Length: 123
Image 1 (cartoon, rainbow, N blue to C red):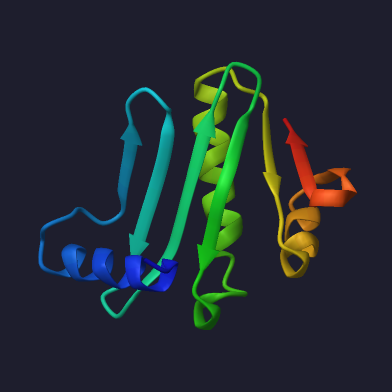
Image 2: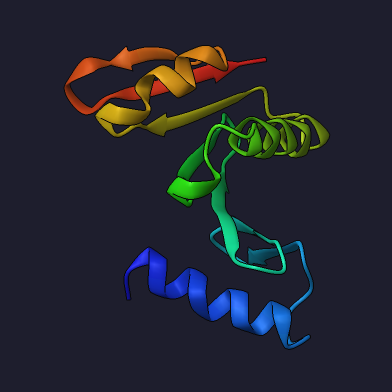
């Protein structure tokens, strides 16, 4: 299932009352945390974070194109940082797509491996 299809399914569940909005989900054992946030019109953001003892790995942060440039990505990353701080984790790592590198740089992420666009934010 493509991310857009997954988002549409979640959006419908949230609008029908089958899922809270915003909704956070943690998968036991692997520590994956997923955050879903909708407006009444469309699901606009999807993110998940995989924690370990050293750092958290941001697997995906997706904002629908029509909702970008509204500070939603920055808001979600700030929320993820807060969750990390609550667990005494002091960094987030990710592998960015080429078109998202500047977004993450503006938030303070530094490239730690150019071959795979691996970035890290320490706080």
